Length: 247
Image 1 (cartoon, rainbow, N blue to C red):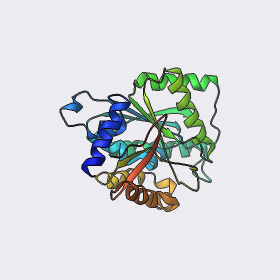
Image 2 (image 1 turned 90 degrees about the vertical axis):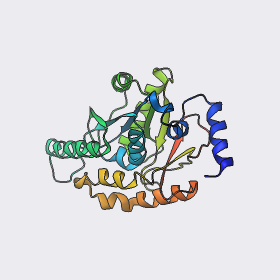
Image 3 (image 1 turned 30 degrees about the vertical axis):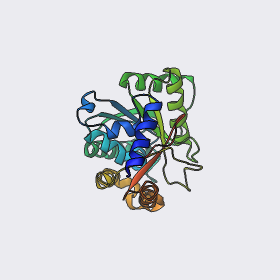
Image 4 (image 1 turned 135 degrees about the vertical axis):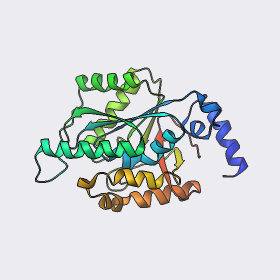
């Protein structure tokens, strides 16, 4: 990154206050003594890992607390398997993935393929997020063809609004061009150092054909987003009310 670009990042970050995803990851160790709380809400086991696993790992390595919330337990995700058995398998896979990422995990309790957006669930997700008291929340981009991804996103947006917009809200992409559409990033995170850790976490989801997940575009996304910001590999995000930052 050039000096002029670094200066742009610092100046742009200052215009929106002390906290932003770029400023958080650029902070010197002394500045990071005030650790932040990060939450990621995904529709299913494997979504947080594939969408922003590299960023979550990078934030955790920087010493921040990270919690992954799975809206569903992936009950419908193993063809020919009962919901109860599939949920048991996929829950174990998610726990193993979170262990690799060194994150806390929460299963919100909705059902894969039958996710619900109503006042009761708005309140439930708001309460779960409020209990975590996050500084930053990541979730799905709402323009996604998967209903569960849409519901997770909308619930996160409602929590953000009802909790007074007191945390930063970022959207991640999954299988862009097949699931996520019209995604124009505002922020990029260089995941070169955590790319292998992200892949290891994703490969815990053996029931979901991890190579197939990467073949749907994730490897290409990491490379392309890296090219956009001048890194080997990157993850991209849209910040609610955000501006363009590079890190």
